[in-house]
Length: 559
Ligand code: G6Q
Image (cartoon, rainbow, N blue to C red; front, side, top):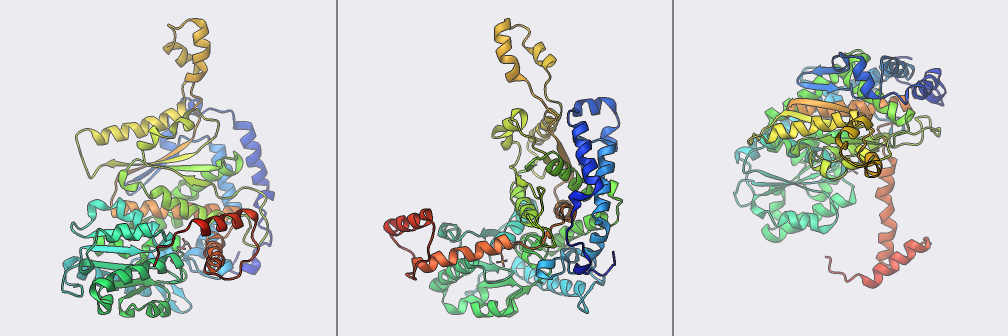
């Protein structure tokens, strides 16, 4: 395939499922599906060393998977068959691989160090990125130092980011994860939901003269964000007057005109570009609330972590390439074992929003039933991503992982050192994480249970034995991180971004559009117009009934 991306040169039907390697993988799955990981570990003392990769303080242990060398060989062949190397080059060099929106996909350019060159339509995007980064840094320093003053001369103590989806989840998650790096006395809040209580409860914690609002919206047309932004504006104006707006509102967007129309001084607007997808935008000016909290120096370390993972992804051989391995192993279960979900379990309280972020990243990117060429795919694509922080999740849903009927692959994410050493707590956390992955892999055999229950009479034993059996063979990856820092978090996020990209390439979907989200944005508009008295369009009986029920019961009370 040529270096210059030409969508018309792509096969109309990606048909990865018609390739010989796809059939061989199915065959291999049938031949090995009864194999137990216990045996694989027993046969190979070096399994952990052979099936783990390390990069700059991030270790991926993928040995607790139902894989052999042959499985990996076939999966790597699948990656080659899908021309993964070519797609990597196309993405990296700014080809318009987001075909349905005719856009380049260049979130990796957001993490490139200054001085590099990457031309898109004749402009060096690295220079553009650095200019915005410098502007954000200058602004962040002003706010952090107290030089930026509100309308009545007070310094900022509270920052409210108003955004949703990609303009919320990424910065929210990164901010939570990097709390130990945040400037004390500068509180960052995130408001996303159009449900009025989200904004109201946030404003209860803020003082108008000390609050800075960031309206974060790539399109600056998202109704939820604009409604919240207008409500926040009314709150400020009612306390401080119209002239306060320019000192208390800034915007992050690609839409200059809409920001201006909202009444935000475009001198206080930080831009980004259509080649940054919402769910990939935390590295851009959308990360401004994070930069305000941790400062520009640490924010650049976060970018450097992302860049280190990019370099690894673009240059490491696939057999030692973390994102490629995670993606291929995910495909092994999703496609060839028919596993429908994939769980993310961070053993770190600061990472508790990571599952939600990865959920958006993965499900919005690869939740597609149609290939790039518009063809209907007749195999499963993106899995349901879910998860919760450990150890809390152990006391909630781990029962199903241990003894339920489903195959549920998972990732355990474990910082090895804590920012909050308290007695023995961190070692207990680590012990729990390792114990769970071991138990999920090993299970508990009949012989082991019999030993425990040897004292029981036969009839009681017959009933209890099956209840206390653990089949094991439940796969997991462990991502062990020396310490959660801006740099290692950057690596971790970029790792998942590339994993999702690799899976999209292999399944033949465009991971960078989101027509389902766009549809959601249109859906409410018609019903809202009907609530405002416009002529009703025909609905199904349920929707009509619920609308009528709402009209009867709604007591108003909104501005
Ligand atoms: C992300 C999605 C979506 C988007 C939000 C907010 O990739 O496209 O989650 O980020 O709908 O969009 P705006 O930033 O345009 O308000």
